[in-house]
Picture 1 (cartoon, rainbow, N blue to C red):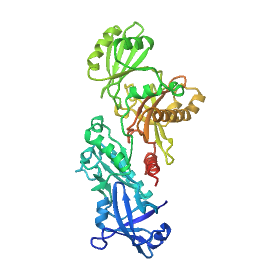
Picture 2 (picture 1 turned 90 degrees about the horizontal axis):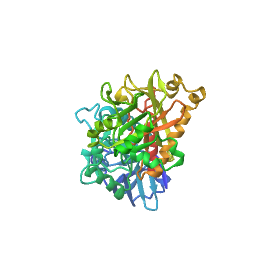
Picture 3 (picture 1 turned 90 degrees about the vertical axis):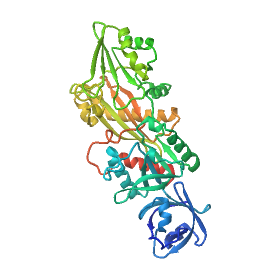
Picture 4 (picture 1 turned 120 degrees about the vertical axis):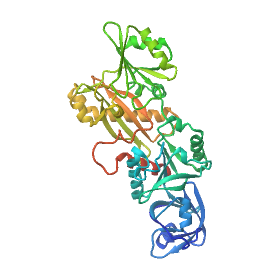
Length: 455
């Protein structure tokens, strides 16, 4: 099977029949493709029998505008190509799609809101590397899984109808949207009928991750004690065992609804709850009263109770770390970036949505009380932990993940701890610091897509 990158030229209306594929003379010889015989043209879920004819002094292929329109190709482009002489199948691609939560059709310069820049970078990288990408939302999914309405970038953002892609990157940021029957049906159909690769296909619950990883002795050292908060007995035991505990919504994100409980010297407890402003502070005389105060929230939300950690501080503010791990061109986990996140103001969580700021790992640990050796080892220890945790999730959780945002902490002794794992890492708060035209996370996603499809 041969593969290479070629130019795909779209001919004007009426110039070329839709069942004819013009192939450069040199390319025909390289592929050992005989003219006058049928060849199957494949682009994602698109399949069409074509007749190949030779074009002298040309090294690409030419398509009629009608067939190009059916493929969702709006203008000339460069694509990778595979030809299998046994089945006489010519594949173009990879065709990549990104499933996002929403679009804003009236905003042609920013149709995807805050992630428009990420989408533009991915489109540009695909154009240079010989891939094709489009973006779609649950609203674009119809009853026919083979066709999807989506956005493509071609001298500006435009809508087109395209085949189901070789690769679907699930970037939905809402569980409600992800669990829609139409979305679940679509993902099942494209995998079973067209062999599409769907990655990051589900959200990860906090308890699910900790429960899965605790079975590994190698990973257990990264895990603070953690349990589902199901009854008073669990709550009382954890509050008695640790001077500080955290209570987190099992399905929370962006630091919403996290509660920190501190045991005071007089036996009372102070509870801080994250809000958009200053955290809400409440004091309870004992565990029983405190649990009663939580009971209302527990009726509507499942919580995880977790051992508190004595984290390192930067200028009196807690610090944690976000490692972005992605699968690379060989399908192996690799660390794309690690950044430090410093809690803002009076907040005890570091999320950017709660006023946190970014820093390099080196700068963040420089002003802490860690030993010189611990400071020097911090970057490599964080990367090693992130890779081990990603591999553990792959091994224990039955779903396909291609990238993970892994939140880690370092305590005052230099020990690494896992805070949580996010299967839909933000494209805003986990990017490397510095001014780059195309962020490494975009290139890594493209590399992995090519690996999955064999292009």
